[in-house]
Image (cartoon, rainbow, N blue to C red; front, side, top):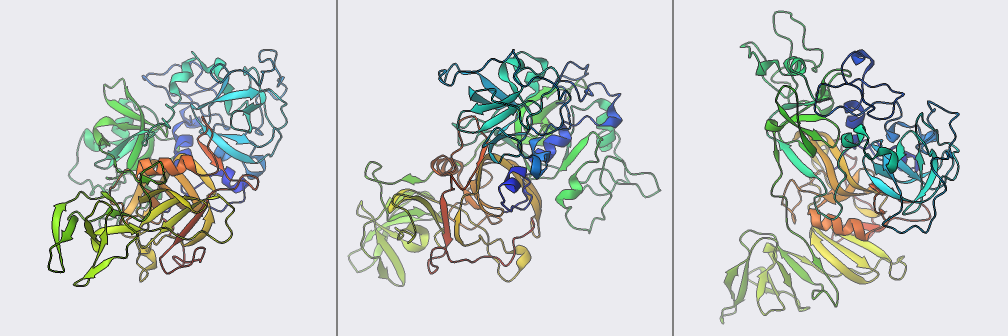
Length: 585
């Protein structure tokens, strides 16, 4: 899947990725208390600490909206995540409430920092303008090695003790100030429960996910009855002259009445599917955005409004009615195979991709007869013998004495080592003909699986999602990020918190896919879709390393990303190819 991405830290690294990660934008919008809502219960003082007790009529209050809430909104020149103006610039960065911390405190007892912004940067040096090497997401906690070690570019904030730069586990520095707090100051405070639940990195599915099974609104805050009437009038008094629901909300009626100010403009029934941009709510209204059928959200927790309605709060800070989405309960369980002497498997190896694949044996008359049907994505260890051709069909000999038919399988063989590889260097081989992905350490393959790469249609550039070919390096890694856009033939799509994302060229990435099980076949919008467990393996195995507590990391000249080679069988490793342009979806 290709998509749009807005990472200020990527810009700071000189990478050029199309905007595709809108989860930070959704967070900004969902947690913003607009000036027009100053009188609304729950509107927060932008100079207050996050979530300081403001009266609110709902079970879960919206998170605050200081202008510095999202590290992603900082300009490139201010990418140290702490250079915004302070509400109390004269505060002492090395407060007596935060004594110098010992670097040798045990890993189970070291104090931690809690991220308050959607992305709180980890920078390479404790100075203004330092390059990002990674980030923590809101609610995430990371152990402190030592600090504070100065406050150059790290603004203090009113009532925040211990402001300044802290060295954190994994290498790098975090600014305790506008975007992060010492966890001791967060624990037990009313706003602690408003922070999203961090992902579980031990699981192939780090979040709980749900799919929208019909068009539905995502609210900016837990709605009141008046909010629901404004955004969903048809739920209260359906009208015969209401236009066809295209997932765009309430349109103006024919007799000249004003359209709902919180909804996008009306569309004619024959205007085609809406664009993702048209689903956004108007700033300051209760509507964050509209969801259309088939969109996915990542869930934080269930909450109940005073109206009695139950909502899911999403990881992006929005609220969706529980009856409009259905939890993803059966994600793909397929996983590839570890290779090597201790693993019991080696290349060549085959994966069954046909639902009618079988094993075969010789029939004594120069042909083959089926023995047993095998499940799709079953694996077979093969001998090094060349395939046997009978009646135009190729059959491979398995190590357990059977034969398998070539056209029912994806056969993966060992590839020669790239000529400029360092001894033992890690690299990833993505073969588009076989839809296979192999992890190598030097000449030794250590893991193999099948994937789903981009659907190819070279005759129509708008529908050609072919995966780019060439030699690349992983540029950035994200435990989860949102992918959305507009597809010429599929309409708008949005998947919050796609797991285990590894960008290697513009918006092309290897990542987990929980919304289909078509591995072994071209299926995606350009990215290399992996089963979630496979994506987690490659995420943890590859460089740059994402330290515990971090949500993402960026490659640097000192710490290069793992090489990725994408090619067809007849294509030399590193040879450039692919679509003439990257689709803007």
